Length: 423
Image (cartoon, rainbow, N blue to C red; front, side, top):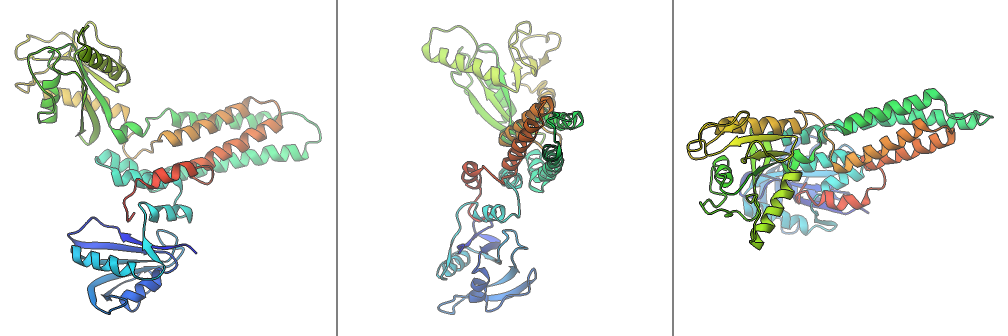
């Protein structure tokens, strides 16, 4: 029999209200043990909560009951909305722990049970994990679209089309007495679905939205990189001196800029150096420039690094004279041009992120979609009907891994371990 689990699902006390969840075959019995009786399913009622062994009054709380399978976990469950003091919460958790058959939940176990009981698929679970961790409005909106089943519905449509193509191929194999090869209409439909998947793969991915668009500040020593970082961050995050080579390792500053997540990175000044430590810092800076989403260049505008998203900055504009053409005049000391620079960074960052409320694939999801696309392309080029059918079967298996129906055991522990104890 499945264990019955319980945990505090709201933030740690003290708080005005705390929520304690119980889920599993003995959840209703546990509710009766503390409250004496349960309300009708999906109906809230006020109950005195008493210790099941001593009868001591623990709290007066709002009690909700949910019956399987119409609950968040797909199991019988009970929710106590109690007063949020530490003593109240600790007493209720201790009382639940003394009931036979109950145990404290592991991190993410409620959501894992929802997945295992078919209440959500793996893409929705990933969206919930991202929603819990969201720190900016753009992250919240993207995670909510995923958690509410946006990708799940799209995948269901792809699966239905794929199943139709498979049925046509299998029927052709079963009833075609001659080995006449693949039907052109079937292979064209395979190509059309593959092209649609390719279009999704070309859209902005979830990783920059989740981890932040990497904005690398680069240039020669004493160009004003660290001062600019501090001015943007609004605090002293990087050491600033007039000694060339002060910054020897990169410094990362996560920020929300106009609701967008960015990772601002200060780097060592680019130059040839005989100092071993500084040379390592320069090499790291060059590597960071190569993988940067956006490079803010404070060096000579005639010799910038290669980047699809490059912003030329004429730093120390208060003392360095007029800015060259196409460069933004910025002074970290006076604030001149800082607002314009931030607007430019936000514009570049926004172009690298999914549109608001759009569904963005993460790396795991993109790998499954790419695998299905490659198999469909193979099917579209095949001359043998039996090979088309086999490619379509393999593509269906890739979609099953995408939704979590099969072959994802290795990712489940890592995913659900991201959740808090009561989620």
